[in-house]
Length: 158
Image 1: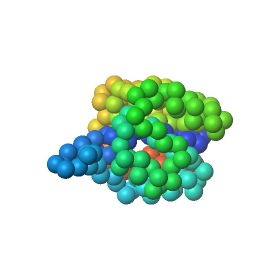
Image 2: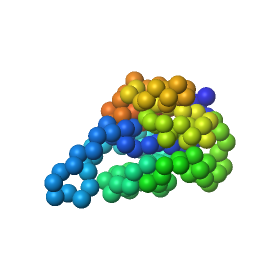
Image 3: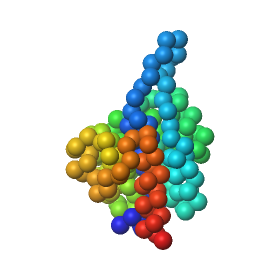
């Protein structure tokens, strides 16, 4: 099933980050950290012809900046209803269910997993997400989960 993947949809907070928000006095926005391994995963996926899309529930300049830096064209922020966005992206690229996978960590990600046809969960995802996911990664959110997923997909392609 992974060898057919042409699109990876991914949440940010709790998936590409550890889900923690650091509020520092004098800063308008919380601080977030991203794993460079996930940045390399985006590069490897693109090189293999796999699109990456971000659909995040939170508006965040840090997340927007990270998406731009990685060259991710399909990046949506402040979206709690993720399934319609996932559907729109799949239609844009002419993809069917099963040609996409959504990587998430919390219950608002489940409808996007259903829309994609396949779901992946970080190891510290909530139980409902783990039950829905076909793949439960060994990595926690913010610890290279996207990299792990991309490597699984590429290994299945050989």
